[in-house]
Image (cartoon, rainbow over all chains, first blue to last red; front, side):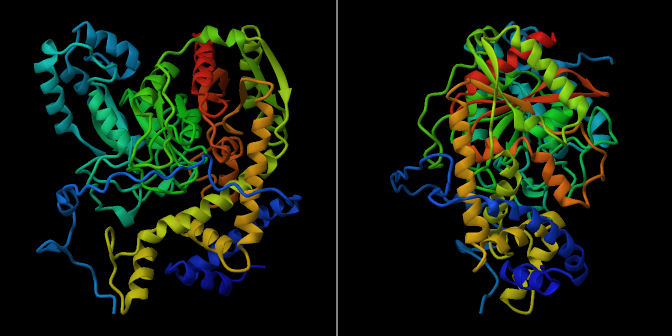
Length: 90
Length: 479
């Protein structure tokens, strides 16, 4: 059983503000969905390897060449003297 | 209609006229914008339109066409791009409030390749927020209506791209497909939607939803048009490590090639829950193909019943991680709070819609301590079994045919408050996505009420040629 308090905790972990009304509305559906998900736990999966990706990825580094940053700076909303302005975090 | 409806042409047919210098590019643009002005008020397929820029580009083409030779089949073709794909200098909202003012600083690789071929981008299309939906009802910019019956959904999440092709507002469109988001709207709107093999097309410049599943694919009127677009956008890209170095086929569909094909029909896809009208169309299509192919045989994909659960566990986990970047600090919406955590929470509360919040919660839950192995880890293992099912099936057949969706288009609002019912709309499209396989939705033979019914053709990895040939055989029968 997933309670409203459980959902509040998950929302905190996901840095998601969520109103009490939204949580109440979501709790019931959330429970139904998780129950539906649980059917996969009935399968015997010993010795089955996990699949993380559909293709084998070979990470090939590319030459580290400095390119124009103009395309980025053109669209930044807060920029001065080549610095990005962001809110204070402390 | 006092003008020629160029939007009703296929790309191939319009290209023939362009090559013969029979038409002006400005007339083509006039024609599609007339159509958009007439239709889009009730359909809402577009978030952004580039009317002035389209005319400017068309005028330049009119002025220079005489000097050009070796014209690319996409030169001057009016094109719509889903709004989660970056086009430099224009909005890329992803259908979300949180990116309502986000202007892309660069072109996605697919956009660069299409621009090099000469397309005219006429607009960015409406979509479910961040691609999270099967009906194109979760967009911050409002729902999209189905052009065949405006009271019904167009399917999602690329509903805007499919709708605009269906109402002839563009000749080609790009959608994105994570678990069926190109194929499902193609099915509901009576057009063609191709999800390429994972890795065939670069994802650079596609705003991520679930990175191990996301694919960019064309939506068109015909399989031949889809092949033209695929051959233009496919190929390795040094900016996407998951794009593969496998040569791309020539854009030619050969319907006669199916003479050599064995078609597999998975029994699990014709079970309880499949609408009888949909079943009838798919069965009729298979009966017709049987007269033209080498053999039709029953096959089994035994883990089909676990695909929706597996898909939603994996995609929500990846989404919760991918969407962590929308924190109000670097770009997008920012709602100030008393402290940093409060800034994050308020921004995400105000910027995301209900379905996105639900999926972030589901993904966070599935990845959290104590549940990771039970949910996400288990889903990854079941994904292996689903892939193995296909590996086994393709030992005995060349393509697999299924319905694209279990039902015809449903009414707007019918499933929006029942998320599990909505997720089950993806029951037939999620398994090829999990296995990374190419799949196409094409209108089958016959109708379900007023609606065309999409038939899904699934191919082996990098076997787009097989599914395009088979799709063009169905088109030939339909003609």
